[in-house]
Length: 278
Image (cartoon, rainbow, N blue to C red):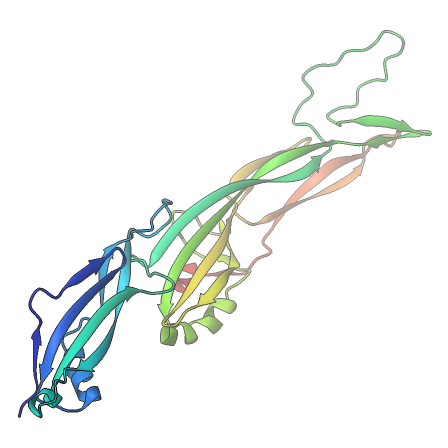
């Protein structure tokens, strides 16, 4: 007798993050054969609106994965030994998979650095008792014995971080991980996600492994190309993550700090195509 599979009448059930279908399987007395026959009706997964979505970063859709169980319909007759009631249930993974496997975000924070030279001094007032003189663009000059110290001031500077999340099958991740490790600490050789050459530094990734997928959250640090004003020298153009260093000498006989004499722009990071990371 050939095996036949028919969906049971009005048997479908729907939950917030699951779906259930019931099939009647006839023509076999083997449980595994009944399960396989019902499983042939399945699709690998179905997607539904995410019922637990609370944040904008949460996926709009989640995938429900399928599993099949079969129970024999027995009332004592030989005929019923060949009839099975198979339940096909689609449930959310422990770690729901987004319909779109790519998430993108940029966070902008700040770093603090001590600045000893002002772009300009906009005002100078003396008490009348004694005028200590012109200290140029130095900030926070204090006397130290016969000389002077420059204390400076702590200033904040922006730091932008680009994060891109990608999900991979276990097989594709195993072939990709060594390539990714080799690109950590390199900058982009061409345009990448809207940023120019050498403006994006690959800082690594956080990786979590699920039953079927690997989720990788990549971090990229951003340093835009800009003009940097160096007192006494002028505006210096710096591309992306290139490094500016300044050769200086004592400012004057009083020993107030140092005076910039020359500025240099150095490339310190290797370049690579970051498009191959994702």
